[in-house]
Length: 319
Ligand code: NCD
Image 1 (spheres, rainbow, N blue to C red):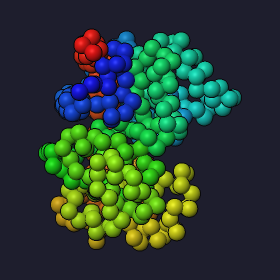
Image 2 (image 1 turned 180 degrees about the vertical axis):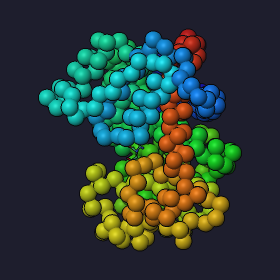
Image 3 (image 1 turned 45 degrees about the vertical axis):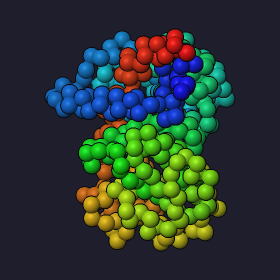
Image 4 (image 1 turned 60 degrees about the vertical axis):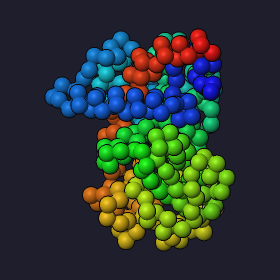
């Protein structure tokens, strides 16, 4: 079987979960576990990426993803800077290409990038010599979110193989859902997508998951993964009203059974897709996900910079 990475240059990127093998996922999660153990000390910094430069280039708002990439680079002793489109020359009309070429002139080792357009990170990967990590492109992919979610599930349940995850809500606009379904499939998990037909279109089943328009479908899941209603992308046209959405699909204490864990990538709309009593309950892993984000992003930076180039080069040679 041909390996998609065999045709690419040795320089490694993380653009899509589709580029990963099960081994890649397990290696990153295991690296994250050992990093978690090593930063659990008083001195939280490791010298691993000393002398490397990580640039975060964010064209969409972000709290968790940007903060954790920045901190991850610092914890590994890399130099890091973050550029948000607001307040940068993007405001003055600079194109993505010119911004990328400008940043490339500083020779960054890694560019971590979030953009509203699908494929923007691929473009930057072609234009620069940096390793590019996709931190979310439109509704397409958010691979590091999927990896941190797998990490948080593995920590909470002790396994990934056979884990059943119900992803509930605005699947249509969700890069998180797309990446997570693919990642779970890689590691032997099962997914059911749950929501109204306007937000969970049938065609999405092609990703290899089940679909249900009934909230009762979350009943046999180990994990209830709640998606944010992306009001900035959907307006209200996709649901008759948010109140009706909440009545039919909101995750309330009555809908969650004992033994299930509840996840949400953040930011949460409390009282819309998730009841505050669930968000603040013992069953919620939301803070664990945020913590996982730091160690998993450290592992990703380490991985693209140090582990895989040799392996990728070998694969390119045999192709
Ligand atoms: C997600 C995103 O930006 O795709 N948030 C995140 O990265 N923590 C999900 C969302 O915005 O709903």
